[in-house]
Structure formats: structure tokens, C-alpha cells
Length: 449
Image 1 (cartoon, one colour):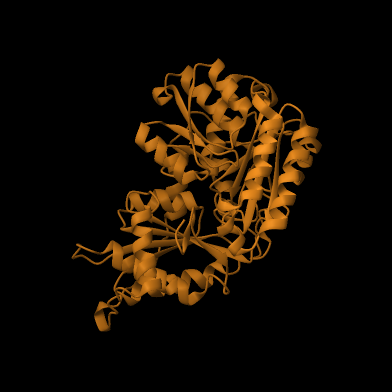
Image 2 (cartoon, helix red, strand yellow):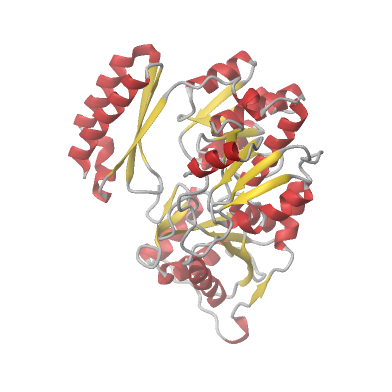
């Protein structure tokens, strides 16, 4: 991780850590880096999620771009993957999304995509950081007719929805669907998308007011959707996060179907149709042992990366693989998108469900998931830095690993976007792994708070 950029862009408490001044500087520095060697005027498109600070930060970063001569196209409220798709479709030089994804409303973030729809590589992020933090170069501020212009995109939503529709070859009539839009970006796109797919759907959490994004709803707070699916006898529930780049599903019995199971279901279906590139799926170290067992039984190879959708994507691009994702619901279909897309994942999953003729629980039950416990420990900023070299924490982890032996595993890592250390234990005995995870968490609290 860099000094400003984490694993998923710049993120922090809006107007405190992520200020308007910083957003303006990011706009200027990004334009400076991306315009090098180009004589034409830089073109940037910008969109945002529904949190109350998004308009403020969108205005600030747009002003930053315009102040150095870049033209800005404002798309309004859209999902993050829409920006990744449209920056390439519209042939713009960069796309910016103002969002803190699944975080509460007081947070916000800035995600930047290149003209090809992929997030900025580390090297470009580091150059942007150097301009802002080290003052090595000063952006060339424009005046008069050289100042950039701001315009507004009218077709962005319909163009993005049209792209999603082009990826499936059937309608979803006959499937009763519950959608949880997390009071976020998908509230502006999902109703039209699923209406055009002839779906019988009901929507929860689709009334954003600026402060209720992700609040007790969406992919990180699935309980309400679970109850709704059972009470209303739905066939499936689909929950997006605030910027709709991830999906968690619920079967007709209210059981959670996470990213591991979704990747497994989609990879197996693609393999049956001979469309799974190199018969391989890409996942992170967090993926369940049950996922690996399922893939092995189906003749599907698995590539494992560090946690973060950017690392999944890097492995997919390097190996030429078509499907990958995270347990948290970031799923990438590289044949259709350059980043995780919750709504794309939803309709791919529904496509498979309808063609299978099975219940959703029937599909999901084919993957046996081992008990897995995660404990999040809030630590100080300096604690995050000290974590990697703390000997007492290393001893606690080694002790747990020795007790589990070959029947399970322990993974302890620093969050890329929050002041947390995450402790994950996995094995056949849930009581045992919960105890071990809590023992490690206790040591971390003592050492890093």
C-alpha cells in the first residue's frame, strides 16, 4: 500500500481524512501524470455513490481536473463498474468513482480507472502521491480559455444497463427475486435492469438519503434480506454493497451464498459449456477449503492470490483466466468486465440458475463449506505498521497452527482499507477455531492498540 492509495484507491473519513483540498490535489496530480506525452486535452468522467459527502468530493476533484485544463464529464450516481465500463466505451482518458464501497456513510473514497477500464497500477499511484506529498512537481495551473469544462452525461445509465443485458441470453421470468440495493448506487440501476429482464422482483433498501448507505443492509448486513426471502417465499435474494461492485446471495431457505460459492457455481457452469478459460478459477487466500475441494472434484484448477480484487485481477490478466473473485463478493468476469460487478454477477448467477432447473439451495449445496471464523480487531495506525514484526503475535499464530495441524488453517492480515487486523481461523471444529481466533485477537489487542 502507498501513502495515500490503499488496496482500493484513496479512502478515509470524508472532510477529515479525505478532504476537499486533498480531492482537488488528487485531480490535479492525476491529470498531470496521465497527460504526460499527450498534446490533446485530457478527458475524464466522474461518478459517485449515494453518500452525503460524494457530491462535495465529486465537485472538488472535478475542480482539480478543470484547473489544470482537463475536461470533465459528470455521470451522477452510478455503480463503480459502470465507470470502468464507460471510460473505455466513451474513449476517455480516465474514470473516477467517488465511493467508499461497503463502508459506513462517514467514509468516502476515490477510485481511478485508466482509459482501458483497469485501475491505476502501483507505479502511477506512487507518482501521484509524490506530486501531492513531496511537491516534486507542481501541476501547471491553467487560466482563461485553457481551463477545463464540465458537462453532464445523459446516456450513461442506459449505456451501462445495455451492456449488462448483452451478457445473458435468457430472461428471468419464473424466478422470484429479492434485491437489496444497500441504499447505494444499484438503487439507480437495478430496477430498470431487472425490469428489462422480465424478472419478478422486489426491492429492499433502495431509498438513499445520503446517510443510510450500507446501514443495516446490503452485502455486509444480510440479515434483513434473509428474513425477507423466507417470509415472501422468494427463490433467491441478491445483496449489493454501496457502490454495487460486489454481491452476496441468499438461497430460498435464507442461507447465505458467499463469493466462494458463487465463483464455484459460475466456474463449474462455464466449464460445462467449455467457456472456462484454461479450466481455472482465481481466488484469494481467504477462500474456504471447501471451495478448493469442490474445484478439485470438478477438474477445475485454482490460482490463489493475496486478499484484494486487484490481486485477483492481476493473476487473471497474467494467466489469461476468465473468472475469479473474493469470498466477500467481488467477482470478476473478464470476458465482460475489467473489475468486480455485483449486478453483472447477479445476472450471470440467475442465468445459470434458470438453465439448471434446480433450486438455488440445490446448486449451492454442492459446495461443502468448512466452518470459518473471522475476528476483526481495531488497532491504532502505528499498530498496523508494527503488526508484521511483532513476535508475540507470531507466537500466538504458530501455536494455533500447531494445534490445528492439517485439519485447518489460520490467516492473520492487516485490512487494506480500515484500521483493522483480521484474524481468520478455519477447520472442521467450529468451537475450536472460534477459541483459537479469539486467543490470537486478544494478543493483538494487547500489543497493537
